[in-house]
Image (cartoon, rainbow, N blue to C red; front, side, top):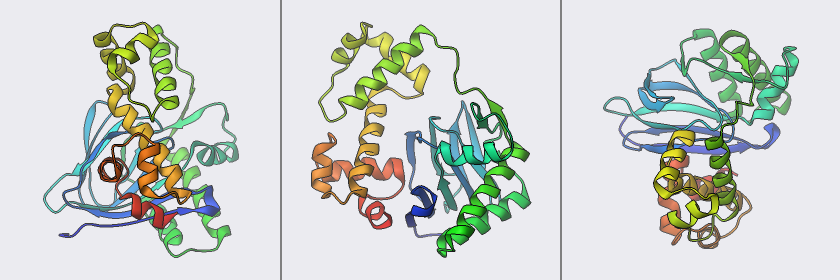
Length: 272
């Protein structure tokens, strides 16, 4: 592999689930998280990524599963990069399989293994992704996703409560998140952010890193990119998107968008 290539689209049949097929050589994903699950298969090369305090290396034929809200990276694990196929299903999509399996729907699936070695499941995922790529009948796409999710949960998952014990630090972190999500387009200083939750700036930095795995400015960029995705999907001009979401200009938007999403704003628009 010597040349990078990216194909991105959203599947309207599956609640606008984002789908990615890519070859990356020098591209490196910044620390980020997703609102839903990130599930993929490595077709060739090796992807390395930091996740849950460890560094993983995913080789050809292995599946990668990242949980919603979990911070991770992504980069070439060896010279030549890696080629993979990804899907980003929302939690409600995965919960459909939970209900079908007769499992408690107030819990969510947790997958202890970030890198899964399961030849049968890998073949099932590849067949599903190829069906998406070939725009198979909606019935087939829905059926394959439900079957894939059910198999993944049954063979490699466990059910956990989505409501961890709430500490004072977590409450403060949630207040900061809410503030950044509401004021993402504004210029926000660390001192001002600390004042909104009545916490000293240094303590706030440590608290956010511990609770999110990200400092506040990186979380803010992630929120801005998420907002930009919604506007891009609605066909807003990119310069307007950049201005409305707090980026200095279109090039600033493009740089951060590519580092987090893996595609440029233009490529993302083309797939919507």
